[in-house]
Amino acid sequence: MSKYVHGLRWKALVLPSLLALGSSVAQAADNGFYLGVGATQAKVDDVFDTNLELDNTSYKIIAGFRPLDLLAVEANYIDLGDDSQTALGATGTVDAKAFAGFGMLFLPIPIVDVYAKLGLARWEVDGRINAGSTSLFQTDDSGTELAYGAGAQLQFGSLGARLEYESFDIDNTDGAELISLGITYTFL
Image 1: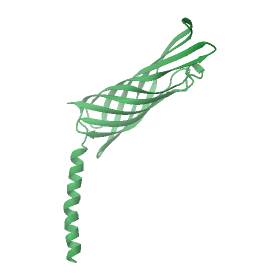
Image 2 (image 1 turned 180 degrees about the horizontal axis):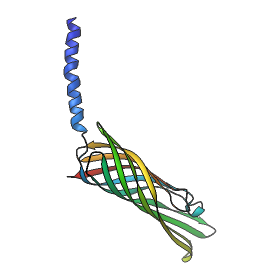
Image 3 (image 1 turned 30 degrees about the horizontal axis):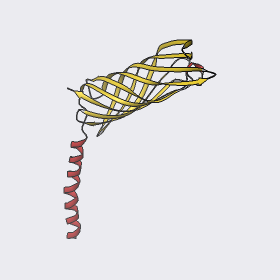
Image 4 (image 1 turned 180 degrees about the vertical axis):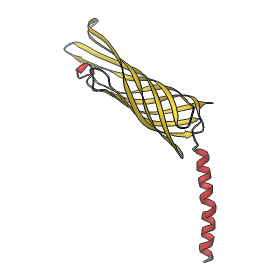
């Protein structure tokens, strides 16, 4: 019986100590202005209804304001990548980017924030076909579409690490889908 009681005392001391240590490492998010960057895997298929597709690892820049634990507003610059293909002596190239603004709703649970985001994305797609130094075709297309996404974020004080998914439509394509891994830093 004393062996059982001794084991309970040990567990009664170690378990709360481990929980306290874990809670000091991962904390609730700081509220305020934040900046961040992310590595993004962007996918845009059938650009201009051709076989050109954007399937690049690129980047995004993040700026936001989180006034409350549950709410934030965020702006992103997203490089969607580029692609080129050559056929019959002509080279087709495409390059795309987007600026997005989101309202975000957070579900702060211990250690991690789960969030959903809804907003607008202003996208730009530039395409050209060249034969040597001669331009055969050039187009610049742009538009504004509904954008949405979801993600999870670990907070370590003012530093956050996030994994997220975002999507929005782009004319003359199958739409944009992005998965990104990023970091943010909150300035109080």
